[in-house]
Length: 448
Image (cartoon, one colour):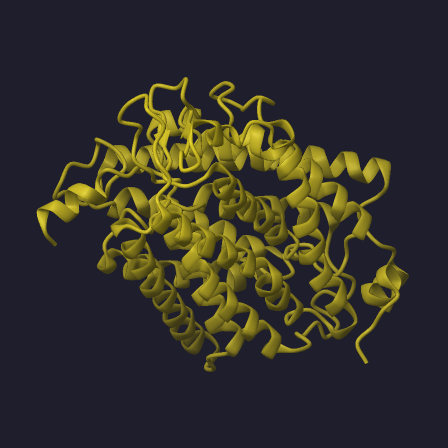
């Protein structure tokens, strides 16, 4: 790669991986960057509806398929409004290193750049030591980040599939988005966030999205308890074709997730797209081979789960590593997540219905730590990794600290939120309702 290209790539930081503001003049909107971010935003939204909805629906029983799909759809609606009202402001306004303020309440002020000229962009964190100069309208950035805020609580739903009240799910989405997701997003992605200033990096959401959702899912699964008939009745997936289609949509949408996190149409976006593809392929191959050795048959559910595990693990590293290490990350994640989702879950006996923790939690932790191991100097987001050097112990420690902090915060806050909801309206449907099926009980509909 030419030296000039490496110099251009190294100008970017962690998500949103945008150039630092060079001076006080408002940056100008770049139409190419804006076009790519609009496409990326649509791709990430595609991951939740219909991608995740079909992926999860294909793995539950027939009597719960509609209820599972509508969970993703309803979360999309609820999380969008929460993000517009207060979530974006808490995550990305200046505030303090711990949390943003309400200066962008109801998205107030995001159109201020129009007063500086029709093609003026904006600068995030103008009062911070390291402001981020955008080359896209703030409205596009708000919408891009909204899609991340949507999919994160939707991922959690896989852990308690087939047994939570719909009313409890909606209330949980509101409270968790404000009290867990927004603070962690601020810590990691705001220019003044305390984990960002510590030096921890997360290119596209390994910590903010996947560890956050996976750990919360485990807490929820433990608090709600096992499905009735777990390990006794036949809980086989209703339609794996749905799951395969959903996984395929997730894979395609993930290019917006990761390559879009470069903040524009640039070299880092290209590298993130390439590393995303090879990591997903590596994850699918690794899970398939391990399962083949373990149970003598490579299953459809296994290979799609492995591909998702590879996508999860590369997310925090996508813009910071080269293709070779990306393949290793995918291969490692496929094997580790198989162990967590199949062997460890069965041994410990908890009912993480659709492996939200086994794939997203464990995959996110794996990817976040391996980012510190494989980050390539010219692509690195920190000074701890000079040009030509791959990985650093200092960066690994920073990543481990961010992982630990996120786990502790998510466990505590998710427990508190679920406990409060349980006391007020209850979390779980009755045994009779669960046996009849959530499609009919909660929504008055069914698949013929």
